[in-house]
Length: 222
Image (cartoon, rainbow, N blue to C red; front, side, top):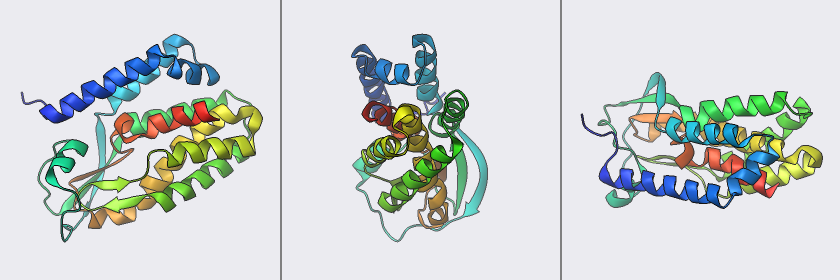
């Protein structure tokens, strides 16, 4: 059976995994998860589930799409940033990424139900980060939606500390992850038909796309 990862993508996966383990060793993740009220065992389960889930896309529906007029990235960079995909046939499949969408959404719901965090605070914070994510995200023909990696965690941490300093850690995770999903993914669905991609996953490439990491960095900064 052919591996779903190219040699370059496999090397990138191993490098990211090694980086994650190194960060755990430095207790950066431990600090963030402790602020979120998770035990070491629960934190490890969440981390590994997000990492493995980042390779799973659940298809929802497909839309008619067009090829972009020209490539916007050189082929070597496109191979580095993208998973191998089937040829573009004029339709784009809209999918949900498990590690980059389902798990962060479920964990955000868990945080919201297990903390004394008003729903209004979470809603306002998420709306603000969503607006910032939409403003800074850009559709990239043949690739997807891109956004500077530190914009969302910085915005989430700042918004959380301004709105509810006493619950800034869980609020930063919630508004950071949900804000990116809404602002950079859901609100950009209208641009999908002009990107020329076979698959557009809500949550992007999961952990590698930065949504999970956005939440953790936001917690560390808040």
